[in-house]
Length: 176
Image 1 (cartoon, rainbow, N blue to C red):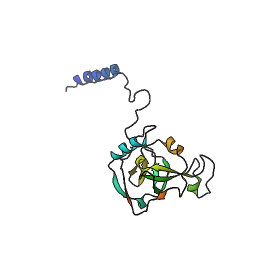
Image 2: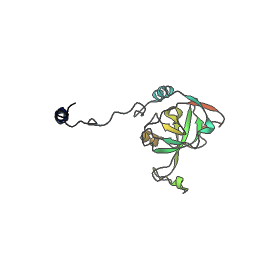
Image 3: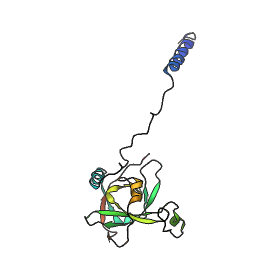
Image 4: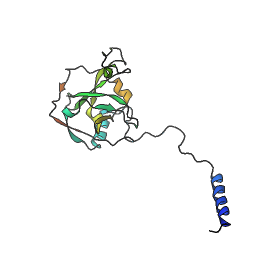
């Protein structure tokens, strides 16, 4: 390229960029919901169908208590902690999750409050609604709002699954 042709080529590139106008990186409106996110109001059969597609792996029940339950989004907020697993009347399994409420006082070692939405409480989450994410458990079959709306679980109201038993739970890739 000659020294005289360079300014012409540079001018052509600048003219093209000016005429093209500014580009938009994102479209207007809300982003579409990714496939891994739970759909509001999913039924139990829909949760089971989606769980079967997550490559269920055998997991020892005793390895699940203590794991954090994460919301399936990039920031991965902690929703609660798995405390155990129980058998349902229909033969399925539920993970018992401790929700710490708004203040999370039990994480600080303080006495939990009995106020609704503030203190810790237990809920039974169907195993079909969760998946393994490394050392965590991800909530995949229901929204966090639906999780918080679950009734309080009464300890002793269901049969605990022994720690040595294995269940098949799906796996999920990271959300970022």
